[in-house]
Length: 90
Image (cartoon, rainbow, N blue to C red; front, side):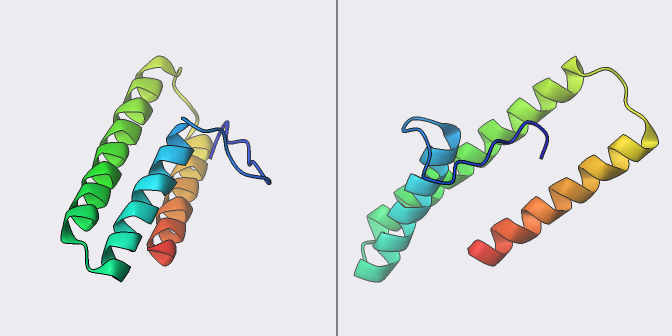
């Protein structure tokens, strides 16, 4: 993913990365404890984060100059890899 800077010792509180993990944890804890409300809130926050992420990518795509086919192929490959990683972690 272009512009991604891994944070080996954690992430900044308040970042999108942080919020995504907090909502995932909230949903998971709800599953473990049988708290349906926490499960729903966590899942709703996850969906909200995914919508915000998609909107941000759409805005960035409009701002970017046209790219070559090779660059477009690389972006698609990176996005597919990211989706596989997310699916494996859920």
